[in-house]
Amino acid sequence: MAVSPYHTPVLLNESLEYLVTDPSGVYVDATLGGGGHTEALLLRLSPAGRVVAFDQDDEAIAEAKKRLARFEGRIDLRRANFGDVAAELASIGSAKIAGILLDLGVSSHQLDDASRGFSFRGDERLDMRMDRRSGRSAYDVVNATDEQELARILWEYGEERRSRQIARSIVRQRPVETTTQLARIVESLTPGPTATKSLARVFQAIRIEVNQELEQLRRCLVDAPELLRPGGRLVVIAYHSLEDRIVKEFIRDAAADRIPSGSKYLPDEPRTPTLRPLTKKPVVAGPDEEKSNPRARSAKLRAAERL
Image 1 (cartoon, one colour):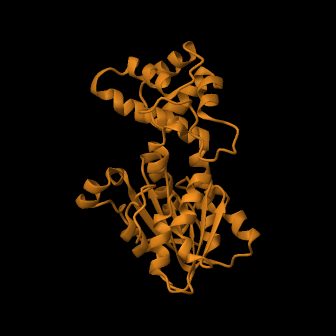
Image 2: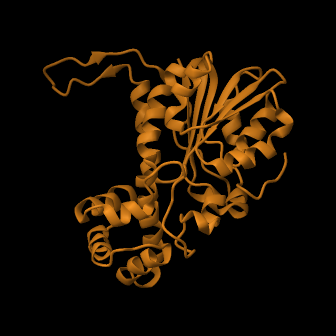
Image 3: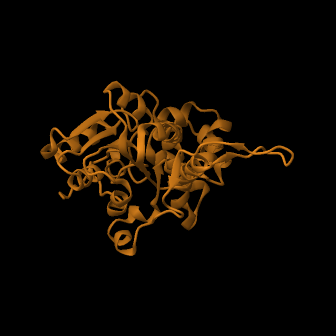
């Protein structure tokens, strides 16, 4: 497999082991990125196997086109958010698919490219849009959101315990135009060794809000069982507790054969489960992968099979 500086795929072998059940099937990579997972998937499939891959980032699509050029005829690259996978597949008349892969979060390239405004290590205008066609950027979130809502975003999406103080300081110092300005505000309230973790949490929270990542994840998960054929697999790689909790609870609920009534006087309501969990606990990277790819340290893989 070709090595790409754009992005190193995480849990590559593990994701394919859970995902591929039919070498001739049609699979969806809902978060294409630099194309590493899709490249390995196409190499694992037979010549009859196909992949429909999605990404909302035009730079990711351009990079993946180069990386996957030799698979022409077996790969369909589509610029769309992973929350819109169901609508996109319907538009091309795709039949039931054999597997869906979601590798969540931000790519290494997006973090390393200071011009995208994702990282607190650069000094660029606040942006953080994965899809640059969308109108709302990190600048808009930071400068046009009221203090109470901004504190909620930092607490709910970043789990930052100083969310109220940081939101108050941001509002007082507006306009906040660059990643450096925002980083200095956070650092002034979180001195010492805790500053880096708070910076990561604050920037993560704003990025999630800008791209509506958790809402898009929920949409994709809800659609997944209807897109998969019986025996088809859903594989999700998450990088923080908010994403992983959503995936864990979704699989648990989809696998339940009854809905609790909430009352000891009423019986539970029977239901037909749609998924069978394949991972009792999340699959994590081994020490060798963690050493070679630090991003893998926080990765958690969960998988389920369509009943």
